[in-house]
Length: 434
Ligand SMILES: *Cc1c(COP(=O)(O)O)cnc(C)c1O
Image (cartoon, rainbow, N blue to C red; front, side):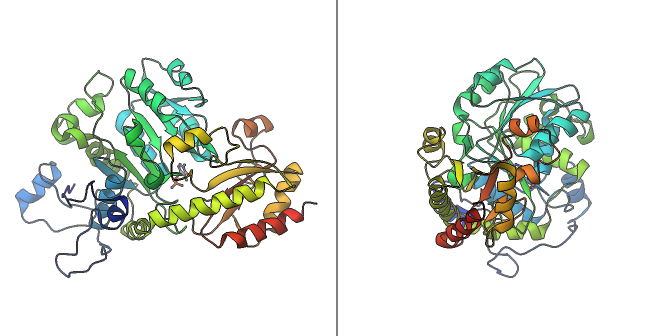
């Protein structure tokens, strides 16, 4: 539960914090890079120290399911980059989402989510959460009033992706935050596709930010992970909607998390209850990989955006391409919102439509050489996916259209290779459609 102050909050620049926030040289060895603390448990000073730790009366390490020094460095770094108060890491993005909802929801409760979400989140919310009694209504985020109309007395949160998967969509965060706050509930924003380098949702009213660190934060396609960040600004006591935060916790001798920990009470509860009891903790090795990845996040994201822009423009002018949906293009209906919320560019994941429909899509993904045909995003490598023949194959035509994965849709996650090589590869693969 360690909350050491590294002194590395703003006004230190984003690049400086990407490299230093949360990390100091190892006190015993002087090691400059954060060591991988590959240990399960930590020796107590004495019996009183142990009991204080277990009662959350002092901060420190107990057991790596709850916290670990390597993971803690990553947590402080992500909190700093998001301008949040505190962060909890988890074994995956989906695990982080589970921790967030378990911390505020009770059976029979309700939340509202944007219909433009990562496919796995739609299944998690619509199917598995429903079995826990957490009911989700999906609404089209393009009209913020849709969130207002879906509110019920049981609604405990609103969930959106600011830059939405599969790609090309930017959601107008500010009015949606205002609707949530008027209803006395938090806005949760999945910031995976943008990363805090391109957008910091807390600035626009988000109360909780979630990440799949698997993607651009770790950035090299080699480490699963997730994170949740709290702004520290949400008042859990303004109504009686959040007893999990504001009433005595029987597992901790009647501790009231919001009263005791205040602006980091949400993270304390997520860790001390949800992470403790369900156990999806991040491994120290994955934390190390993600810390290393974040050190180059600012320069990687600039290059991801630069490459994505060049490739989107190339595709837009190609005769075998019907349409391109990238918010960085002037032709995109989301270009104005992108300029507001993502002034340095709307990431590098987007979709386009190939001529020849389903068969055209299949031929394209089978003919690329440099692009990897797989289901992931946010790698140094460029990735390509034809959802209709892979991730969305089991769905009906109608479900596919609702999910924005019509037969001709191709999703790209543009990597960091030489842009011209990527263009040459797509060009030769598109030629095979003729
Ligand atoms: C991948 C992804 C997730 C899920 O994260 P995992 O690390 O795969 O569990 C959630 N949201 C978005 C936007 C994603 O891209």
